[in-house]
Length: 362
Image 1 (cartoon, rainbow, N blue to C red):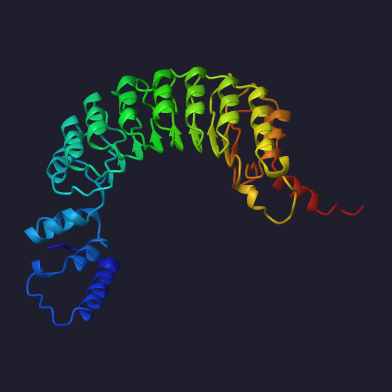
Image 2 (cartoon, rainbow, N blue to C red):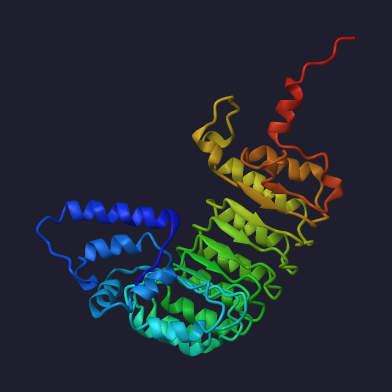
């Protein structure tokens, strides 16, 4: 039996009473008699452990859950996650979202192969910190889950760049991809494959993938013009050329991470500022006390921490171009930690606040 407590239990009681009022004349003598609609409504109010328990109550519940469950999170499983996935994958064939993030490595290739063999409608998959997985897993996903749109492989250190590239040839609908810390899996070859195959990509995390260079980022920029979020933190080989390509081709870019990219200079900042002016209606921002609908366009987040070659004038140009970039307390969407020479850079909020402070009478 599914056991719940507290507020969830109260919600279940209310749900049950409401459904009973609508089902006059229907006899429910056993758990298996509960209609599918009511069962799925009940299960939407409980956690995933209870959903799994419910699937073992009877054949009717198992079949109903198998056909109705679209989202499952197993990150709470600290032991035997691999065995759990192997047992559940054949049951929950309609899953669209599966979260398997681990605090300690548990998943093995056979579990991912089971997912690929049974969960063909999967769109979102989180395998972060799966240190035991190899290229076998990506090969299985490529063939079994071609509808993936969101994939998290962060801190999966055993994949190769060829395996990631192969995956992109089948999973062409990917829009969100997290490869942070995948030091062996991300190279210029990987980024070229993403640019060629995943033209709908909107968010890509390449943090601390130290092998990539300007060639890879330029391939990405050319191939993924709808890119909104890109994290290049710790990608120490890239230079201004990468940022210039992004500024020219990725006109929808909203968030850019360049932490510790110490080869970045003022040229990169001016290219961002120029692209912002070029892509705005009328060619420039309209200063107005009332927030314009265009204020949310352009960069909203920029991390240039430890980019010590930058000068205040160049960074101020970027800040002035994009009203959503803030240096003021509590907002900090323009992050400049470790750049002691940039302390004079301020967003419009701070300047306006300074102007509004009345001067003391002498």
